[in-house]
Length: 185
Image (cartoon, rainbow, N blue to C red; front, side, top):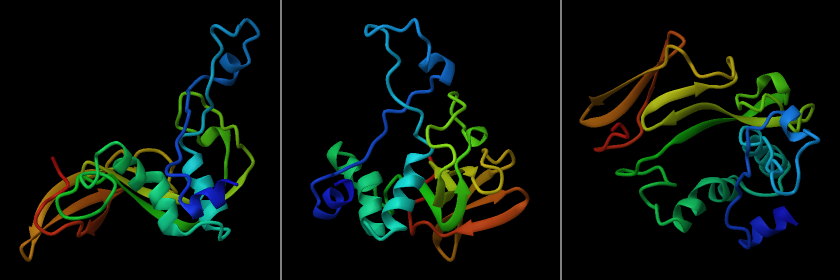
């Protein structure tokens, strides 16, 4: 039903009701309907699961995945084309995806303060490898799954084009992200 709705354009966006309550807090027997700890720890896991189960199994296209996880939300909230698209003049936060990276979801890999995954044990294929936020390389998953401690950001120019250059764990990488405008603030 989810995949059909995305394919037909009936489902515009996928979100998370993420909360960082620990297992102990979620299972606390003193909770009542008034103070029930709602939500689930899934912010880190749902995009790879959507990719693995949707794109990886041919249920939705890569373009539909991008639309429901990024572009459509930017449009709905009136932020497009400043957000939700990679183009000159846009302020893009970028996830560089490795569609072949395979992992088994584990509690110990969770970055959330919840420190557990409701999906622990699930095999998933396709993960963000690098995340760039406001021009800063913030995460290199797949190496350690933690923010890169020595990631650095420098904006520069090459042949009249602006580019973003970053270093991750000692290895310099360059990406030509846009002509004219840099994504740096």
